[in-house]
Every structure is written in C-alpha cells, then in structure tokens.
Amino acid sequence: MSRNIKYSKKQKGMRRLSALTKPVIAHATENHGAIYTQICSLWPNISDEMSKWSYPKVLSFPKSSRHNGTLTIWVDPGRGPEAQARAQEIINNINMVCGFKAVGRIICQQTFELPKKMGGRKFELPQNDSQMLPRDANPMILNLLEQKTNDISDPELRATLIRLGTVIALKNQHD
Image 1 (cartoon, rainbow, N blue to C red):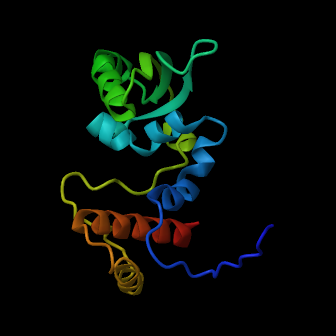
Image 2: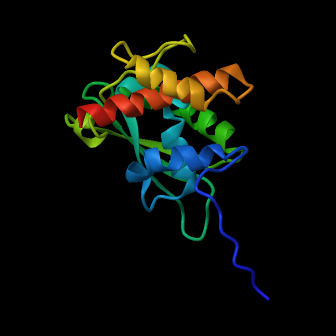
C-alpha cells in the first residue's frame, strides 16, 4: 500500500552539504564520479598555493578497480617541473582526503589555456582568513545569506557558506 506524501518546498531542519555544493560544481565534474568530484571541490585545500596555477583534469583507474588511479592535472607553462616535484605531496593529500589509496600517480600537462579550461575562475579564494569576503559583495546579499545561515551553530561552516554564497551571487551577476 503506497501513500501519496506531499512535501512542502520549504524544508525544515538540516540538509546535507553535498546537496548544496553539487549543483555548484556539477558542470565541472559531469561523468567523472564521486572521487574526482571530491578532488575538484577540495583542490585548493589539497594543493595549497598550487591551486592558483593548476587544476585536476581527469582521474583514471586501472581496469575493474577504484584504487591506485592516475590523476592528470593541468598546470601553467613553466610550472610542470615544480608540479612534478610536489606530486608525492599531492598524492598523499588526496589519499588522506579520500581515506584510501585513490591516486598512485600524477601526470602534469602544461597548457596556456588553463583559465579557459578551468571556466575562467574570476575570484581568488581567501588564503588564511576565514572571514574574508569578496570586495564587491552586495550588502543585501550578505544580509540574506546571514539570515539563511542563522541556525547553523558552527561559526566556521557558517562563514564558509556565506563566502560560497557571495561568490556564487557575484559570478551570476557577471555572467
């Protein structure tokens, strides 16, 4: 016996973070799987300052396996040797984030079109200050985001969501 349950559009309670972030990065990670999506979304944390001049291109695995894959990354011209020298550090960081040996090898591809291939990243990520917001953030949008995140108890998560919302709003204004 099935029941017809209607859900209201306004949800009460908590929602999964993945439900909020997936639409934001879906265009960049279509048909690549959860591990690649996780690497892309956490790339600035995984690669630190290297994220300014590199980006993961594709993650491939040996046949019938999801371990010990090969990650190909795009890098700016002239940064290939530096990226290759830091490859083991990046592999360790990725495997730590994934919780298993997801990546065993990194291949660097130098390209002049990195900003174009990355979707023309317009905003730099804040380096160390968790409260940093884009300079041209609209106060009305900030107020709305603060109201929407009022019931989130973790201040760092709340600040991160507000930053993410302002960057998305600014990107939508410029597009």
